[in-house]
Amino acid sequence: MTNRLKDCKMRNNVWNDWKFPLLMSAVTTFTVTFVLVAVNYGWKPGFLFIWMRSWLLAGVLVALSIRFVGPRLRRLLDH
Image 1 (cartoon, helix red, strand yellow):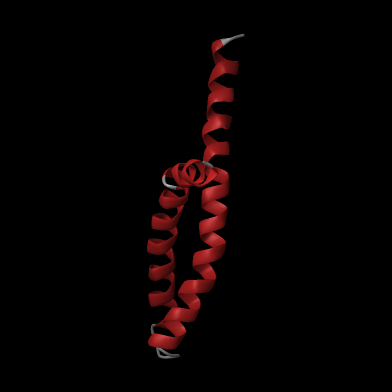
Image 2 (image 1 turned 90 degrees about the vertical axis):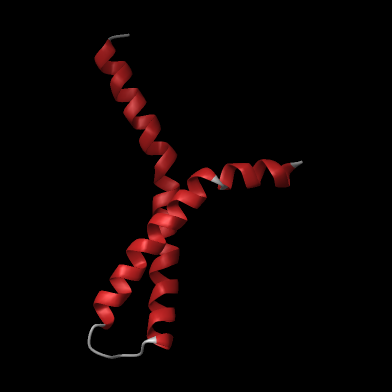
C-alpha cells in the first residue's frame, strides 16, 4: 500500500469519527437555540445575530461532547 493511499484512508477515518457528532449537534442545537433565543430575547432587531452566535457556540460544545464523552457513556451504560 502506498503512502498516499494510507494518508487518504487515515483522513477518511478521521472524517468518519466526526461526521455523526457534527451533524447531530448541528441539527439539535439549531432547533434548541432558535426556540430559546425566541422565547428569551423575542423578535427584536439583532435576533438573527444572537441566534447564530448561540448556535455556533452550542454546536461546537455539543459536537465535542458527543465525540469525546459519548463513547464513554455508551461503554458505561452497556455494562
